[in-house]
Length: 194
Length: 177
Image (cartoon, rainbow over all chains, first blue to last red; front, side, top):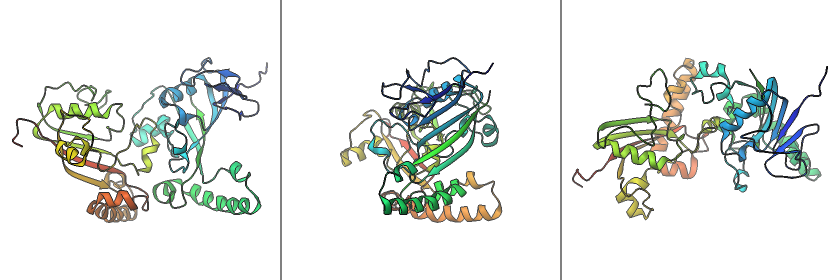
Protein backbone atom coordinates (compact mmCIF):
# COMPACT_ATOMS: atom_id res chain seq x y z
CA UNK A 1 0.00 0.00 0.00
CA UNK A 2 2.13 2.87 -1.23
CA UNK A 3 0.81 6.40 -0.96
CA UNK A 4 2.37 9.29 -2.83
CA UNK A 5 4.34 11.43 -0.36
CA UNK A 6 2.68 14.66 0.73
CA UNK A 7 5.09 17.48 0.19
CA UNK A 8 4.38 21.06 1.18
CA UNK A 9 5.76 24.37 -0.13
CA UNK A 10 5.08 27.16 2.40
CA UNK A 11 4.68 30.61 0.85
CA UNK A 12 5.44 29.75 -2.80
CA UNK A 13 3.74 32.78 -4.36
CA UNK A 14 4.42 32.36 -8.13
CA UNK A 15 7.33 29.95 -7.79
CA UNK A 16 6.01 26.69 -6.38
CA UNK A 17 8.43 23.78 -6.14
CA UNK A 18 7.56 20.96 -8.58
CA UNK A 19 5.37 18.26 -7.04
CA UNK A 20 4.60 20.23 -3.87
CA UNK A 21 1.32 21.48 -2.38
CA UNK A 22 1.47 25.29 -2.27
CA UNK A 23 0.24 26.91 0.97
CA UNK A 24 0.15 30.70 1.05
CA UNK A 25 -1.74 33.46 2.84
CA UNK A 26 -2.28 35.34 -0.46
CA UNK A 27 -3.76 33.79 -3.60
CA UNK A 28 -1.48 33.51 -6.64
CA UNK A 29 -0.51 31.12 -9.41
CA UNK A 30 1.42 28.57 -7.37
CA UNK A 31 -1.04 28.41 -4.48
CA UNK A 32 -3.27 25.35 -3.92
CA UNK A 33 -4.29 25.95 -0.32
CA UNK A 34 -5.01 29.35 1.22
CA UNK A 35 -3.99 29.36 4.85
CA UNK A 36 -1.87 30.77 7.62
CA UNK A 37 1.49 29.11 8.43
CA UNK A 38 0.90 29.92 12.12
CA UNK A 39 -2.19 27.65 12.11
CA UNK A 40 -1.71 25.25 9.25
CA UNK A 41 -4.76 23.44 7.84
CA UNK A 42 -3.06 20.02 7.96
CA UNK A 43 -3.34 17.09 10.33
CA UNK A 44 -0.62 16.23 12.84
CA UNK A 45 2.16 14.06 11.33
CA UNK A 46 0.67 14.19 7.83
CA UNK A 47 3.47 15.78 5.74
CA UNK A 48 6.57 14.00 4.40
CA UNK A 49 8.61 16.97 3.27
CA UNK A 50 8.57 20.76 3.50
CA UNK A 51 10.19 23.34 1.26
CA UNK A 52 10.00 27.07 1.92
CA UNK A 53 11.99 29.78 0.21
CA UNK A 54 11.99 33.38 1.49
CA UNK A 55 8.76 33.08 3.47
CA UNK A 56 9.47 32.77 7.21
CA UNK A 57 11.14 36.20 7.34
CA UNK A 58 7.69 37.72 6.68
CA UNK A 59 6.01 36.13 9.71
CA UNK A 60 5.85 37.87 13.09
CA UNK A 61 5.37 34.86 15.36
CA UNK A 62 8.34 32.60 14.58
CA UNK A 63 7.65 30.15 17.41
CA UNK A 64 4.11 29.54 16.13
CA UNK A 65 5.43 28.63 12.64
CA UNK A 66 8.22 26.39 13.92
CA UNK A 67 5.72 24.66 16.25
CA UNK A 68 3.26 24.14 13.39
CA UNK A 69 5.93 22.83 11.01
CA UNK A 70 6.98 20.29 13.64
CA UNK A 71 3.37 19.30 14.35
CA UNK A 72 2.31 18.59 10.76
CA UNK A 73 5.53 16.76 9.81
CA UNK A 74 5.94 13.01 10.05
CA UNK A 75 8.84 11.79 12.18
CA UNK A 76 12.04 12.02 10.12
CA UNK A 77 10.52 14.47 7.62
CA UNK A 78 12.97 16.75 5.83
CA UNK A 79 12.55 20.53 5.88
CA UNK A 80 14.43 22.77 3.50
CA UNK A 81 14.34 26.50 4.29
CA UNK A 82 15.96 29.33 2.37
CA UNK A 83 16.02 32.60 4.32
CA UNK A 84 17.80 35.97 4.17
CA UNK A 85 21.16 36.07 5.97
CA UNK A 86 21.61 38.81 8.58
CA UNK A 87 24.16 40.54 6.35
CA UNK A 88 21.79 40.55 3.32
CA UNK A 89 22.17 43.85 1.44
CA UNK A 90 18.58 44.10 0.15
CA UNK A 91 16.66 42.95 3.22
CA UNK A 92 15.51 46.47 4.06
CA UNK A 93 14.02 46.99 0.59
CA UNK A 94 10.98 44.90 1.54
CA UNK A 95 8.95 46.64 4.24
CA UNK A 96 7.07 43.47 5.13
CA UNK A 97 10.23 41.70 6.35
CA UNK A 98 10.19 40.85 10.04
CA UNK A 99 13.57 39.27 10.72
CA UNK A 100 16.95 37.99 9.52
CA UNK A 101 18.73 34.70 10.16
CA UNK A 102 22.15 33.22 10.88
CA UNK A 103 23.42 29.67 10.28
CA UNK A 104 22.50 28.87 13.89
CA UNK A 105 18.93 30.21 14.00
CA UNK A 106 17.35 26.75 14.31
CA UNK A 107 19.72 25.27 16.88
CA UNK A 108 17.37 26.48 19.61
CA UNK A 109 14.90 23.76 18.62
CA UNK A 110 17.37 20.87 18.91
CA UNK A 111 17.00 19.06 22.27
CA UNK A 112 20.64 17.92 22.24
CA UNK A 113 21.83 21.52 21.86
CA UNK A 114 20.03 22.64 25.02
CA UNK A 115 22.13 20.31 27.15
CA UNK A 116 25.28 21.48 25.38
CA UNK A 117 24.75 25.23 25.31
CA UNK A 118 22.19 25.96 28.01
CA UNK A 119 19.87 27.64 25.48
CA UNK A 120 16.40 28.34 26.82
CA UNK A 121 13.86 25.81 25.56
CA UNK A 122 11.20 27.94 23.89
CA UNK A 123 9.16 25.00 22.57
CA UNK A 124 9.70 22.04 24.92
CA UNK A 125 7.83 19.49 22.77
CA UNK A 126 9.53 20.47 19.49
CA UNK A 127 12.72 18.70 18.44
CA UNK A 128 14.31 19.62 15.13
CA UNK A 129 17.86 18.80 14.04
CA UNK A 130 19.76 21.16 11.79
CA UNK A 131 21.66 18.89 9.38
CA UNK A 132 23.03 21.59 7.08
CA UNK A 133 23.16 25.38 7.07
CA UNK A 134 25.00 26.83 4.12
CA UNK A 135 25.43 30.54 3.45
CA UNK A 136 25.35 31.94 -0.06
CA UNK A 137 26.99 35.18 -1.13
CA UNK A 138 24.85 35.61 -4.24
CA UNK A 139 21.97 33.29 -5.21
CA UNK A 140 22.99 31.35 -8.36
CA UNK A 141 19.55 31.87 -9.95
CA UNK A 142 20.11 35.64 -9.87
CA UNK A 143 23.59 35.32 -11.39
CA UNK A 144 22.15 33.07 -14.11
CA UNK A 145 19.95 35.94 -15.32
CA UNK A 146 22.93 38.25 -15.95
CA UNK A 147 24.86 38.78 -19.21
CA UNK A 148 27.99 36.82 -20.24
CA UNK A 149 30.90 38.70 -18.64
CA UNK A 150 29.03 39.60 -15.46
CA UNK A 151 27.80 36.05 -15.14
CA UNK A 152 31.34 34.72 -15.44
CA UNK A 153 32.86 37.09 -12.88
CA UNK A 154 30.03 36.76 -10.34
CA UNK A 155 29.96 32.99 -10.79
CA UNK A 156 33.67 32.73 -10.04
CA UNK A 157 33.49 35.10 -7.06
CA UNK A 158 30.45 33.24 -5.76
CA UNK A 159 32.32 29.93 -5.98
CA UNK A 160 35.38 31.26 -4.11
CA UNK A 161 33.52 33.27 -1.44
CA UNK A 162 30.97 30.53 -0.73
CA UNK A 163 33.76 27.98 -0.47
CA UNK A 164 35.64 30.06 2.08
CA UNK A 165 32.50 30.96 4.03
CA UNK A 166 31.19 27.43 4.35
CA UNK A 167 34.59 26.03 5.28
CA UNK A 168 34.08 27.87 8.58
CA UNK A 169 30.66 29.57 8.79
CA UNK A 170 31.26 30.83 12.33
CA UNK A 171 34.45 32.69 11.35
CA UNK A 172 32.67 34.17 8.35
CA UNK A 173 29.66 35.37 10.36
CA UNK A 174 31.73 36.56 13.31
CA UNK A 175 34.45 38.40 11.41
CA UNK A 176 34.27 38.90 7.67
CA UNK A 177 30.78 38.46 6.19
CA UNK A 178 30.36 42.21 5.76
CA UNK A 179 33.80 42.72 4.19
CA UNK A 180 32.45 41.22 0.95
CA UNK A 181 29.21 43.22 1.08
CA UNK A 182 27.17 40.64 2.96
CA UNK A 183 25.65 37.27 2.09
CA UNK A 184 22.17 36.93 0.57
CA UNK A 185 20.84 33.77 2.13
CA UNK A 186 21.10 30.76 4.39
CA UNK A 187 20.00 27.39 3.01
CA UNK A 188 19.01 24.95 5.77
CA UNK A 189 18.20 21.27 5.78
CA UNK A 190 16.38 20.34 8.98
CA UNK A 191 15.07 17.00 10.19
CA UNK A 192 12.00 16.48 12.36
CA UNK A 193 12.47 14.26 15.41
CA UNK A 194 9.40 12.85 17.17
CA UNK B 1 13.33 36.25 38.65
CA UNK B 2 12.27 34.79 35.31
CA UNK B 3 9.11 34.34 33.26
CA UNK B 4 9.37 30.56 33.59
CA UNK B 5 10.63 28.14 36.21
CA UNK B 6 14.26 27.05 36.27
CA UNK B 7 16.99 25.88 38.62
CA UNK B 8 18.18 29.43 39.42
CA UNK B 9 14.75 31.03 39.44
CA UNK B 10 13.45 32.24 42.83
CA UNK B 11 10.42 34.06 41.55
CA UNK B 12 8.30 33.62 38.41
CA UNK B 13 7.06 36.99 37.15
CA UNK B 14 6.78 39.24 34.10
CA UNK B 15 9.09 42.23 33.73
CA UNK B 16 6.16 44.21 32.32
CA UNK B 17 4.46 43.97 35.75
CA UNK B 18 7.05 43.65 38.52
CA UNK B 19 5.56 42.25 41.76
CA UNK B 20 7.43 44.74 43.95
CA UNK B 21 6.46 48.00 45.67
CA UNK B 22 7.74 51.33 44.36
CA UNK B 23 11.31 52.19 45.46
CA UNK B 24 11.71 48.85 47.22
CA UNK B 25 14.68 47.31 45.40
CA UNK B 26 18.33 48.40 45.74
CA UNK B 27 19.70 46.94 42.58
CA UNK B 28 18.56 45.26 39.36
CA UNK B 29 20.78 43.20 37.12
CA UNK B 30 19.48 41.89 33.82
CA UNK B 31 21.54 40.16 31.14
CA UNK B 32 20.25 39.37 27.65
CA UNK B 33 16.61 39.82 28.53
CA UNK B 34 15.47 43.19 27.19
CA UNK B 35 15.91 41.98 23.59
CA UNK B 36 13.12 39.44 24.24
CA UNK B 37 10.41 41.71 25.68
CA UNK B 38 7.41 42.90 23.68
CA UNK B 39 7.24 46.34 25.27
CA UNK B 40 10.68 47.56 26.38
CA UNK B 41 9.31 50.97 27.42
CA UNK B 42 6.94 49.36 29.88
CA UNK B 43 9.74 47.22 31.30
CA UNK B 44 12.04 50.24 31.66
CA UNK B 45 9.27 52.15 33.47
CA UNK B 46 8.71 49.16 35.78
CA UNK B 47 12.40 48.85 36.63
CA UNK B 48 12.55 52.57 37.32
CA UNK B 49 9.48 52.34 39.56
CA UNK B 50 10.74 49.57 41.83
CA UNK B 51 14.36 50.71 42.27
CA UNK B 52 15.17 53.07 45.15
CA UNK B 53 16.56 56.52 44.35
CA UNK B 54 20.33 56.24 44.13
CA UNK B 55 20.01 52.51 43.39
CA UNK B 56 21.41 50.82 40.35
CA UNK B 57 20.09 49.10 37.23
CA UNK B 58 22.56 47.13 35.11
CA UNK B 59 21.28 46.17 31.68
CA UNK B 60 23.28 43.95 29.32
CA UNK B 61 21.82 43.51 25.84
CA UNK B 62 23.09 42.44 22.40
CA UNK B 63 24.62 45.20 20.31
CA UNK B 64 23.04 45.69 16.89
CA UNK B 65 26.26 44.53 15.19
CA UNK B 66 26.22 41.20 17.08
CA UNK B 67 26.11 38.30 14.62
CA UNK B 68 24.70 35.95 17.27
CA UNK B 69 21.71 38.20 17.76
CA UNK B 70 20.23 36.58 14.66
CA UNK B 71 20.73 33.06 15.97
CA UNK B 72 17.65 33.35 18.20
CA UNK B 73 14.33 33.80 16.41
CA UNK B 74 12.63 35.05 19.58
CA UNK B 75 14.82 38.16 19.68
CA UNK B 76 12.76 41.27 19.09
CA UNK B 77 15.40 44.02 18.98
CA UNK B 78 19.12 44.65 19.37
CA UNK B 79 20.42 47.84 21.03
CA UNK B 80 22.69 50.78 20.21
CA UNK B 81 24.99 52.45 22.73
CA UNK B 82 22.68 55.45 23.09
CA UNK B 83 19.46 53.52 23.67
CA UNK B 84 18.96 54.82 27.20
CA UNK B 85 19.57 58.50 26.52
CA UNK B 86 15.84 58.85 25.81
CA UNK B 87 14.97 58.15 29.46
CA UNK B 88 17.33 60.76 30.92
CA UNK B 89 14.99 63.76 31.11
CA UNK B 90 17.68 66.45 31.15
CA UNK B 91 19.55 64.86 28.31
CA UNK B 92 16.44 64.17 26.24
CA UNK B 93 15.26 67.77 26.60
CA UNK B 94 18.68 69.15 25.67
CA UNK B 95 18.95 66.84 22.69
CA UNK B 96 15.36 67.52 21.60
CA UNK B 97 14.38 63.85 21.88
CA UNK B 98 10.71 62.98 22.33
CA UNK B 99 9.93 62.25 25.99
CA UNK B 100 8.45 58.76 25.76
CA UNK B 101 8.29 58.21 29.51
CA UNK B 102 7.69 61.53 31.27
CA UNK B 103 7.57 59.84 34.70
CA UNK B 104 10.91 58.09 34.26
CA UNK B 105 14.31 59.67 34.77
CA UNK B 106 17.31 57.38 34.42
CA UNK B 107 20.84 58.72 34.40
CA UNK B 108 23.29 56.60 32.42
CA UNK B 109 26.41 56.36 34.57
CA UNK B 110 28.24 53.92 32.33
CA UNK B 111 28.01 52.53 28.79
CA UNK B 112 30.39 49.81 27.70
CA UNK B 113 30.73 47.96 24.40
CA UNK B 114 32.08 44.42 24.63
CA UNK B 115 33.71 42.87 21.59
CA UNK B 116 33.84 39.31 22.91
CA UNK B 117 32.63 38.57 26.47
CA UNK B 118 35.00 36.51 28.60
CA UNK B 119 32.23 34.03 29.53
CA UNK B 120 32.04 32.90 25.89
CA UNK B 121 35.74 32.10 25.43
CA UNK B 122 36.53 31.08 29.02
CA UNK B 123 36.32 27.35 28.19
CA UNK B 124 38.42 27.41 25.01
CA UNK B 125 42.03 26.21 24.62
CA UNK B 126 44.88 28.35 25.97
CA UNK B 127 45.87 29.68 22.56
CA UNK B 128 42.32 30.58 21.52
CA UNK B 129 41.62 32.06 24.93
CA UNK B 130 44.73 34.24 24.78
CA UNK B 131 44.00 35.41 21.24
CA UNK B 132 40.36 36.23 21.98
CA UNK B 133 41.25 37.92 25.23
CA UNK B 134 43.80 40.08 23.39
CA UNK B 135 41.30 40.97 20.63
CA UNK B 136 38.63 41.70 23.21
CA UNK B 137 40.88 44.01 25.23
CA UNK B 138 42.09 45.81 22.12
CA UNK B 139 38.78 46.31 20.31
CA UNK B 140 36.66 46.91 23.42
CA UNK B 141 39.29 49.36 24.64
CA UNK B 142 39.30 51.28 21.37
CA UNK B 143 35.51 51.20 21.10
CA UNK B 144 34.96 52.58 24.58
CA UNK B 145 37.20 55.58 23.88
CA UNK B 146 34.24 56.67 21.76
CA UNK B 147 31.29 54.32 21.36
CA UNK B 148 29.82 56.82 18.91
CA UNK B 149 32.86 56.68 16.60
CA UNK B 150 32.89 52.91 16.82
CA UNK B 151 29.22 52.58 15.90
CA UNK B 152 29.35 55.26 13.24
CA UNK B 153 32.43 53.96 11.44
CA UNK B 154 34.15 50.78 12.34
CA UNK B 155 32.09 48.31 14.41
CA UNK B 156 31.50 46.07 11.37
CA UNK B 157 35.15 46.15 10.26
CA UNK B 158 36.01 43.82 13.14
CA UNK B 159 32.89 41.68 12.78
CA UNK B 160 30.67 43.47 15.29
CA UNK B 161 30.39 43.71 19.07
CA UNK B 162 28.57 41.14 21.18
CA UNK B 163 26.92 43.36 23.74
CA UNK B 164 26.37 46.73 25.37
CA UNK B 165 26.31 47.18 29.12
CA UNK B 166 24.38 50.08 30.58
CA UNK B 167 24.61 51.12 34.23
CA UNK B 168 21.67 53.33 35.10
CA UNK B 169 20.76 55.30 38.18
CA UNK B 170 17.13 56.24 38.84
CA UNK B 171 16.67 59.91 39.65
CA UNK B 172 13.54 60.44 41.73
CA UNK B 173 11.86 63.48 43.30
CA UNK B 174 13.02 62.49 46.78
CA UNK B 175 16.63 63.11 45.80
CA UNK B 176 17.94 66.64 45.42
CA UNK B 177 18.40 67.51 41.77
